[in-house]
Image 1: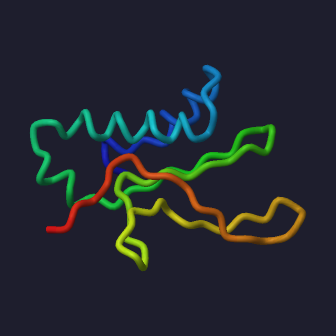
Image 2: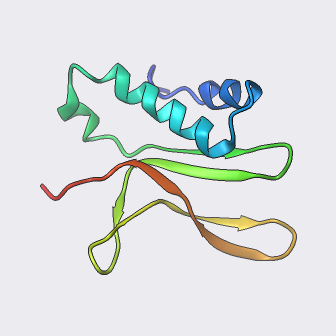
Length: 100
């Protein structure tokens, strides 16, 4: 695993009281900070953090947005089964990926 992509940041943030969404965003912000000197390299990454709290609250946040059918920015989509059935859930993103 790459030095800047450490999932323990997510766990530690949640231990301090962050929600799963906040914890994922904190970890991604840390990766961004680690690549401030080389933003071109950061653009090559496809990175998503997933988090599940003991309460059942969950989140997924990607570094970059995806493009929807209408050209709109979208977060990551992931499957979730919370006992009420499986469904697709839309997560968030930290930065909007602009067309090249």
